[in-house]
Length: 327
Image 1 (cartoon, one colour):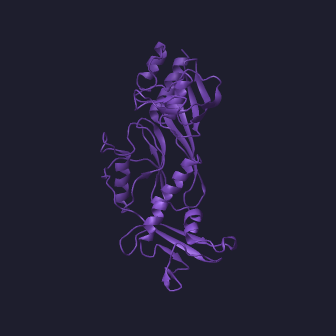
Image 2: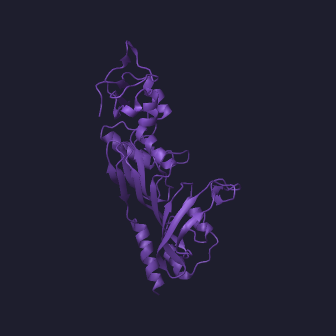
Image 3: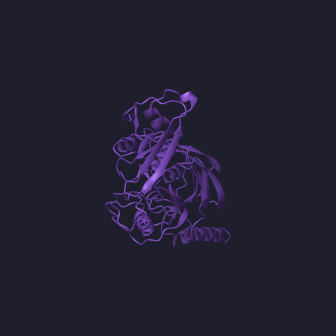
């Protein structure tokens, strides 16, 4: 919604002080009850009437302070205006919207597109397309992705539509409360066919753009289960991330001897049969798809659950693997 001053109101929050919170400081309500980030709270302090108690911006004849002691029944109200400064240029790039409301946007990202502009990809990214879509609707929303997908990975991506929603989702990411499910076509068949990979990951010291399993790396946990086996040389595996390290599934599956099919960084050196080589020939990317997301809505706390089916190129790969296995 847009205010009379032309600014976009991103969110409104309200908290009624309970008897158990009698005497609590306003700052504690804002930080621990409404879960505002320090950065957002600092910005709100500079904005007119952004924080009120019982509809007022003053108390006892003086401006409201975050050190103010509150009483049971006091109503704290917060108005968060959107930051509209955005350096991403709008471009008419198609986007596949799975869900959208005033706070979040869930997209089904195609393979081959970068999520956010970088030095190497200043344009033509998913962000450029989303900004174009919002501008066409008259929304001055900034692009804030809550999770990350590699350029070649397809599937579900959450975008927060204002800073508070992004902060709430980031908290869920930090505490691993966002359930992330993937499907991957891999070399061989993992043994056992269901299990958990606990192997720390860090940058490769010789090639910093790659990741490796190393004893002094960051704790990394992937749960996997074989969905289909195509003989002994390939399989379709579901993976659930308990942590979210860069390239985690790709590195972990390589670690157990089952690198992702089509992975130009981590598949090298595997000897494959002629039928598997033929099945892989049309594949232009690593065979990884973000198929499922579960999280709590950043504003309402409502459980959210989204799925995205395998895209056409991976469905075609599956058919080739099934056909080759039957030869």
